[in-house]
Image (tube, rainbow, N blue to C red; front, side):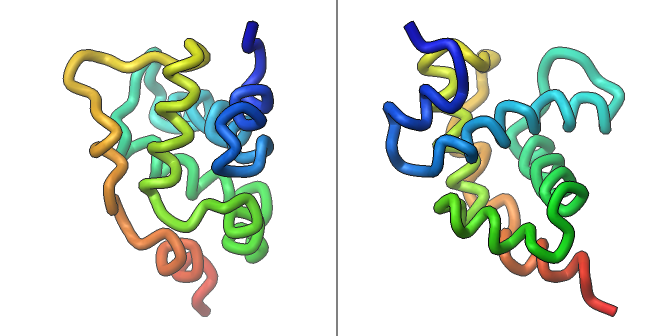
Length: 116
């Protein structure tokens, strides 16, 4: 039985297992940041994940995500839906993996946070 996001990552194999933990933890981070409970949109989660990455790793955030295989917001969607398939996250009616399609350019958004 799958019990952790890292186990989902090992089974899924598309990204580093640490990426699955990051996205899983990112849901709670995003809910707290938005002062919400329960559910956020795919777009809101993408923005929350970027904020969490910048908070955790600063200027190294793009490198960390790239090392894990995350290149775009679509990758966040693939991870979320792998976690949903293994019942570590849930989806609402009307939610779709396409909610994560090209929400923004991940590399540009991460780099823009550090322009002086």
